[in-house]
Image 1 (tube, one colour):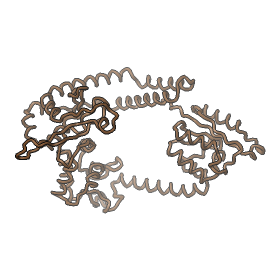
Image 2: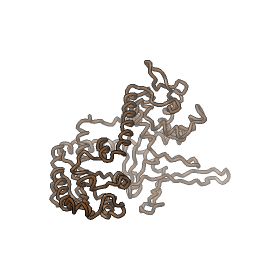
Image 3: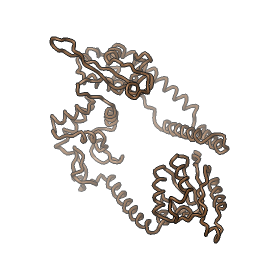
Image 4: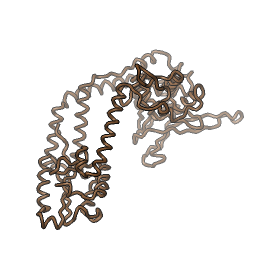
Length: 465
C-alpha cells in the first residue's frame, strides 16, 4: 500500500561566523533538504530560515523557530527536516522545551545528514547528547529489562504484585511451586453473585446495594468499577492468559455493553425504561429522561409518576429545535403492541445490509483501493487537490481497505435471534405485566439496542440486540 504523503517543513540556519569561515549557506542547506524531501516522498509546505543566528542563541530570539512552532501547533506539519543537529539546537534546555511541543503535536524531526541521530532509538538519543543520553540510556535499559522480566512472568502466570494489590476475589497461591493468582474461596461466592446480579438487573447502584447488604457492607463503588473493567476477571492480563476466570470472554463482552449503557436513577425513584436507547429525530442526540409526579387523589394523596424523554441539546444547550417530550408510557405501549412486527422489519433490514456489504465487497477490492491511493497521491503531488481533501480521502480509503482486509479474514457472524423468537411465541405481555419496574427496564435493555423516532415523534423502527 502506498504510504501517506507527509507534509515537511525545512528548517535552515547559519551564523554569520559560519557563513564567512565555512560557506555553509542557507541556499545550500535548502537545496539539499528539498532534494531529500523529494527522494523520500514528502511535500515541502514551508521553509523556515534563521540567518546570522547561533544555535546557542536564546530561543526567544530565533524568530524562524517560533514561526515554525506556530505552524506545528496549527497542525500544518508532520515532520521537520534540518541538515545537521547543530543547525537545530546546541542548547539542550531549549531543545527539550521545543521537543515537548513537538511530542504533544505528534510531529517528529529528521537530521538528514545524520540518520543515526534521532529521538526514536536509544543509540540516536545517545548521540544527541552524551551526558543526557547516558542517563537516558540507563533509564531505558532498566525499563526495558523490567518490562521483559514482567512480560515473561505474566506469560508464566507468576505474580508480579503483592497481596495488598490483589483484586477482589483473588489471592496469592502456590501452583506448581510458584506464586500465582488464584481464586479466593472466601470471596468467590461474592464475586459470582456480583456478576449474576449485575447481568440480570443491569443496575450499578442496585448491584452495589445488593453486595453491601448480603456480602460486604464496605463494598465501595470504586471496587464495583474495577470489577466491571478489570480484565483479570476474564482470566487475562495485558491480553495474556494469566489467572482463573470468573466469566467467559462472551459473557465479559455482554457485561461491558451493559456497563457502558446510561441507566438513569433519580432520588424520586422514577425508573426510565429506555434511557440511552432513544435518539432525537432532529439532531441525533440521545434523549435524556425527565419526569414529574402529580396527585391523582386528594383524599388519599395518591401520586402518579410520569416519565418522559427530551433532547437536552434543545432545552438546555439551545442548539436543537426539538423541544418535544416523548412519553415513556406511549413508547412502552407501542412496543408491547408491535414487538413482533418491529422484529420482522429489523430482520429484513439486517438481510438488506448484509447483501449490500457482500455487493460492496465484490466491487471494492483491495487492489482497486490501493490504486485509488496511488492516484490520490499523484493528484496531490501535482497540486490538483488541497491538503484537507487529500488527507480526508486518504484516511477514508485507508480505513476502508483495513476493514475490507479484516472482513475477508474474519468469518461472517450472524446474529442469533433465538431468544427473541422464543419470547414472541410465548404470552410475553402477561409475563411483562407481572414484572417490577426495575425488571421491565432490564427486559428492554436486554432486548432492544436503539429506538428510532419519526419527525412526529412516533416510533419509526427498532434495532434489536
